[in-house]
Amino acid sequence: MDISVVIPLLNEEESIKELYDWIASVMQSNHFSYEILFIDDGSNDSSWSIISTLAEQHPEVKGIKFRKNYGKSQALHAGFYEVGGDVIITMDADLQDNPEEIPELFQMITSDGYDLVSGWKKKRYDSVLSKNLPSKLFNWAARRTSQLKLHDFNCGLKAYKNEVVKSIDVYGEMHRYIPVLAKNAGYGNISEKIVKHQARKYGKTKFGMDRFINGFLDLMTISFLSRFGKRPMHFFGAIGVLMLILGFGFSVYLGVDKLFLNPKGRLITERPQFYLALTTMILGALFFVAGFLGELILRSSKSEKLYEVESKINL
Image 1 (tube, rainbow, N blue to C red):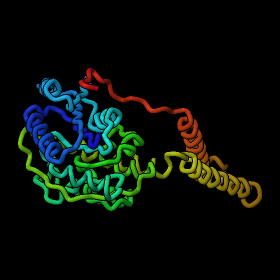
Image 2: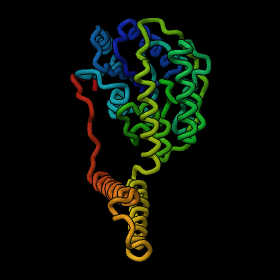
Image 3: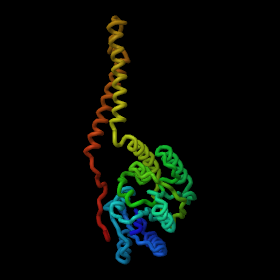
Image 4: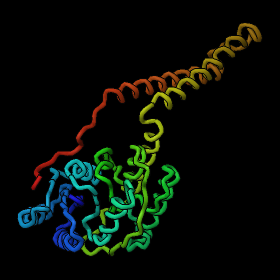
């Protein structure tokens, strides 16, 4: 199979049929063998009914339905597990991503040899204050943190080699950082392509300030994990040892001062340096233990499925 198209969605009943027709037209005109996998992330409209009808009429249409809304990352994780195309295309279901970009994205993976190609919505049709400006700030921070020179990390339209999506775990809100996850997994041949952005035709955006804030928190998480995820003791242990040394140094100073330099002075427990030394040593021990526990958890942890599938179609 040439292409697997993975489409996570939530309450997009108006656009599903139109999106399928658009994708099918592109695929057939380019003679691709393909599958289209819709992941219904707990919709409460008729989205699943429409997907079911399409699957009955078209064997290339497949579907996964979650019992409730788990988030886009979990939807992509489920989709990546199931698909089998040589090239995986992800896109949103709101018709703002243009399926006509697929042939060129496919060529960039198969002919140019890229591991991942991320779309760049250079000209956007979203609200400046609610989405464009936060997106620019987010992408600037992501570039500085990850050292990946991409302009639009959160663009839903991306293309991947099959082996890339099989090698990464997308969880939490990490779908924004799939290029970073791929880079950390050893797939560094990453590029971007300017893609057309369509004005939203149906419904309303799911983007809110909570997702913006969560995005930056996840950026901090993935930045830490990319540097210390496989060696937490190097981070927590180093801080712990440094604080223990500082606390012990203060203690030695206080002891020497009381015994030899100023034996008739204040009691050690009456001096603020004593509590500073005590607090520093306690914090140092806690950091060291945190690093040790992190190492134990890392060696015993296994991937968990953080979503529950209610039903599947054609899978």
